[in-house]
Length: 458
Image (cartoon, rainbow, N blue to C red):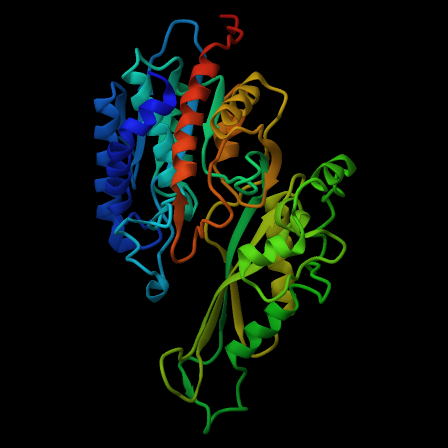
């Protein structure tokens, strides 16, 4: 039976399994969901065991590990994905509840539908196809973690202890996106990430703004003053030394990207913003993929409930991250960021700056390996077009740690779309991306299984 026919016959079962996966509210950022993370990990472990994998759980929250021994002489791959998801708030903006999967308008809607449960499911389904058709053509290590959205702390520790046991010839990850439906894509690089929190403290408690306003520094004003000096009106980041290691865009890449419809109207359509804004001198595509950024993700201070409350708040906080590009050293940027924040701090407040998880450098994958070519051929077969190579602005921080145990490339073969609203209300995964993504995953393992890799000398 050919791949497309099998997928068509299995659509009901495929969706039923994915919906079960999506119903687990696996929010790693919130402590009261730890039991659900455990339940989902055990469900994945049981699923993989039923497919014939050797399985185990490691760490807290559990990392699902599985191993399948393929044909003698076939390559060994390492698959990485995550089952945790972003918090779904604001809940009132969801058209249907975030953990009640709903199919409408040709897509499945739920938190995690694309990032990353739906994309992980393309591979789980591909493995089910192969175990029903004589077995996987490769040997396969599987790592599916429950902490990617909060820094992968457990996985870093587990890799230190066990990574040498999981060596592989290549890696495969599906947690990236196409440029658009019309332009299938293989991601060739990701930006690094430094995620911080700034806390400004003033008076010992909230103060009455009438009787004591104008007497002490307002932490909210102090924080706003600091944040306003992190970027200039030209979109340039003002941290001293921030751009010292950043290379100018590759002229060849710039010429290649001119063939893409990456014009302003495209970005306006997928963002819904009234106008574009960013670093002067660079196109929207360059700002979104190969230039470093600094963004504020959350602000909190004082009274934010309904109605009024006249206070001077005791403290103010902001969550601020930087996306980093190749050659930028996260530790050097972290030191420069701290110094600059302290230099900007006005008198009358105390300030602290902390990292919310381990920083990660940018990641690149080569396009000249047979495993990349196998992925390109698989995407072409499934989607009817050869994929374009393109860097992506997002981050998967743990890839650099995984690369230590993988002798070849980590192939980034994702099937999401920029319009899938990941990290936002009404996240979804287009069903045609799901079906074709499954086809591409099945084909990739078949093509990878034909490759032969050099055996290291004993």
